[in-house]
Image (cartoon, rainbow, N blue to C red; front, side):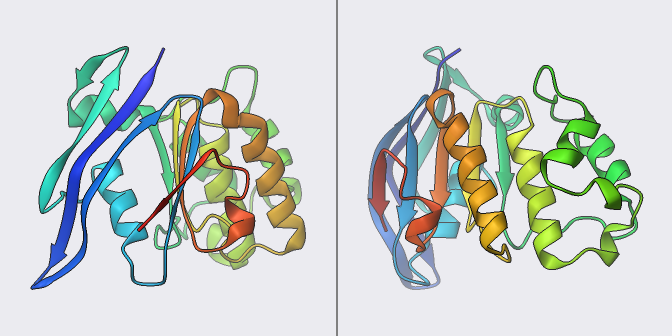
Length: 203
């Protein structure tokens, strides 16, 4: 399966202020991209537009599977997305959360919930409620939900937020091992989060 995202003259305005105009690019399967720029430049907003959470003020985003256009309801099932502002439900345990999540996104073939928990070093916390997790633990869970979902597209906004050095190394190992057979877009101004990508798109 081949997934392609076409951005054509995408522009976003809030009030009278334009964040950016005329952003055009073709994002292809098997390649990774970084949306870079200063704080407030609109990286996260553009990632949300690609995801379909926001609409552009001008221009369009088209999603193609094997050259066939997908509508929004079809597109969403091919994406795994995470961002610092996405919260996990506090009252669920880790095991409950992962079981719930992977009802909507199929887990990668050959892996189980136990494997996912072990991969992000949370075996001893599987029955602990997420409200008792540290910010770094929560971030590892959010990233694991991306890495172990059987989806061809990863959209990651500031993926190393709250991670320590060990967590950052884990993130880099996991994403680099998957980059050649996914379409990955990372919004970041931290080079260590994206220095392995094929192309940078400066906002």
